[in-house]
Every structure is written in structure tokens, then in C-alpha cells.
Image (cartoon, rainbow, N blue to C red):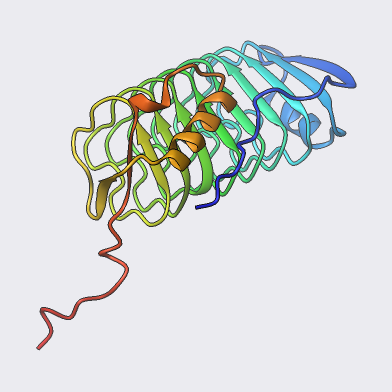
Length: 238
């Protein structure tokens, strides 16, 4: 197994800073400014007010701080850079993230980091259902618990849950690795508990460190694919 070093949460000091207020600025105007930014610029967005698609489609190495709760699809299609939300997030946080860091200090609703190909998504609170659904390489660290059907059809990447996991964890999972500190209500099809060897403890320690957490990796259990769904069985053919 190859242990990769997760992207650290910290980023270099910005070269310039700008701020927006969503009580007067539109999300469209804010996103346009973020898309036109140069590398290492820093932005602060105040009074998010639960609006949707804030900081979506960032493709430059910038640092964005959002103060307030965000609605659907915050930081969706995130390609690089860092987004920090001081609040909670609605459906589809960091959906299809490719790289970079997205950090939410509160809770996230369902489908957090769905289909993510890379990068690091940190949620200090809880998430709803389908966290990491169809993940394809993203790393996700959840400080609290996650809802049902999380990591469904997860193909690659790592999901760390410091709390509990809901029903159907890892249903039809491929090669993603799941680490859960608390209880698991039930495992989905082909998802099994696996031994926690030294290499996995080291991997988990790196993920927790990158997310700024202090849990002991020895308190977690590892889950992954039994690889029984990789091959078609013609038991019911005629």
C-alpha cells in the first residue's frame, strides 16, 4: 500500500486581500472576482446568509474565507486553493472537488464531497446522508458523525469519521479506505471490516494531522471492499 501525505490545511501567506459582503454583492459578482484572481490572493466573504453556489468553480491557488452559513454547492467543482466556511453548509459541499482544501467549521448536509477526485475536505461537525458518495480520490475528515449511505460506490480516497456512521456504510465500495472511530449502524453490500496494520495507522495519523485533529488513530476501525462484487457470477443464468 502506498501512503500519501494529505494536503495540509495551512497555506502560504496571501499577497493581497479583498472582501465582499453578500448583503450587497451578488454571488455571481463574487464568483466572477474569484475566477479572475491571481495565485495567492486572499478573499473574505461576509454575511453568506445561506446563499447557494458561493465560491464555486475556483481554479486558482487562492484563499477564501466565508463568514456565515452557506447553501447548496458551496465550493463545488473546486480545482485548487483553499475555502474555509465559518458556519455550516448545505447540500453538495465541495461536490466534484479535484484538489485543494475545503474546510467547514460547522455541519454539512447530504452529499458532502460527492464524486471528489482529490483534495481534502474537512468538516468539524456532522454530515448528512451520502457523504463521499462515489468518491474517486478525495480525502474527507469528519469531526462528528455521518448519515446513511455514505461512501456508496466509493472508488478511491480516504474517509475518516471521528463520530458514528449511519446505515449502509460503503455499499458497493471499490478501493476507498474508510476509518470510523465510533459505531457503525450497518455495512453496505461488499463492505467489511479490515485489520488496522501499522501502515494504516500511519495513514490515518497523517489525515488527522492534516485536518488539525488530535484523535488517537488506535481508536479507529478500518473498513473496505471484500472484492466480491468485482466479478459477475452467473449463478442464476439459464
